[in-house]
Amino acid sequence: MLLIKNGRVLDPASKTDGALDILLDGERISQLAPAGKIAAPPGGEVLDAAGLVVAPGFLDIHVHLREPGQESSETIESGTRSAARGGFTAVCCMPNTRPVNDNAAVTRFILDRAKAAASVRVWPIGAASVGSKGEAIAEIAGMKEAGIVAVSDDGKPIATGKLTRQVMDYCRSLDLPVIEHAEDVSLAAGAVMREGVTSTRLGLSGMPAAAEAVCVARDVQLAELTGARLHIAHLSAKASLEQVRWAKQRGLQVTCEVTPHHFTLIDEDVQYDSRFKMNPPLAAREDREALLAGLADGTVDAIATDHAPHEPALKDVEFDKAPFGILGFETALALALEQLVHTGRLSLMRMVELFTTGPARVLGIQRKLAPGEPADLTIFSTGHAWTYNVNDSPSKSRNSPFDGRTFKGAPMATIVAGRLVYRRK
Ligand code: DOR
Ligand code: ZN
Image (cartoon, rainbow, N blue to C red; front, side):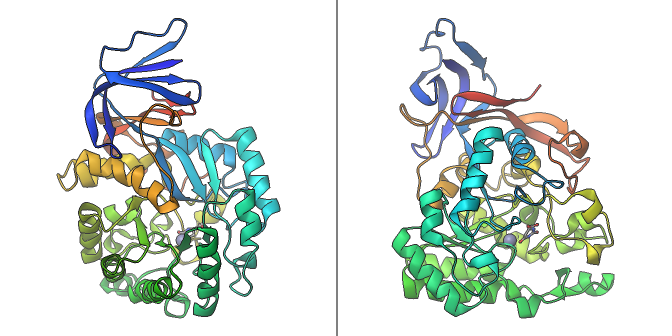
């Protein structure tokens, strides 16, 4: 038994915001009551959360754990320890491993490794096409039986409209969301950053915002045609957000996520430093403004990190040769507080929603604090002052543009199935 007392409990599902105690019994929540009303369980543990926020467990629906195949950049063990430090209690891992998670055997391998070594829950995403090559549809039904929660060819888009339609038809019958890395690869070919004044000044090859938006437009049309659930990954452009807004107004089952780096940084921050290189690339100032508006007005459904570790040997090279991707877990909440809450743009409740009920809805599951629900909780401070030192990270990689940044607010404890998997000292 674990009693969490005196915290400010924020639960978007029930709109609760108050001083409550929460009693956990094994893997489930057993009781919630006004602060001071639950006696400390004999022989149980007590965690005093006075001054802290207690929220449903944060869920990150877009992460790369690199296992199997690229264990020198990350493993399920190292990646989920980093996730726990970031306050995440569950992560959905993308299938671009080696081999690609395009069949039930790989899905089972990931789940077995997670059972043995993970600090948080690991929910695999299966590939849409065999090898994510965009030619033949993957064995989606078999992977669903093995435990995938969505499909995606992330790292690249589902190659053609025809295949996307086929994947959507299939996923609709299986009730799985299709997660799209939206990119017209012909428009993006050879590009290493966003096209604009900054790419011209730096002499780097840029991809236009339209590379993302035209793929979103294609997919929204196909979602209407098929009735499938479509989720746009790491949405970065204003034009793409307008497509999603239009789809929602039409009543389509279209959702989207935004990363902390896209709502914090812009193309002007890129300085031949590969830690600022990711795909989609950092966008223009007006795109960031649009994302902030979408996060506030409900158009954006989730914050997801796109945690994309690359070991130093791969990433510490010239900008145009480096792989796309940056670390995400340990700075996500702090950046959300900094950019969204401390600025007054979003309420704390709305921010919590973007880390909890929002991503859960994308997957078609619930997240709430109630008796009988899984004992997954994220406890955080909105004021704790700290400096991020990437060398302290349990991740095997170091590719963060936020190394050395000072923050106000941090995860203080992460609880998964009633177990304390991270506690900030
Ligand atoms: O920046 C990125 N990194 N974007 C992607 O789409 C893939 C990811 C990775 O796997 O490194
Ligand atoms: Zn992607």
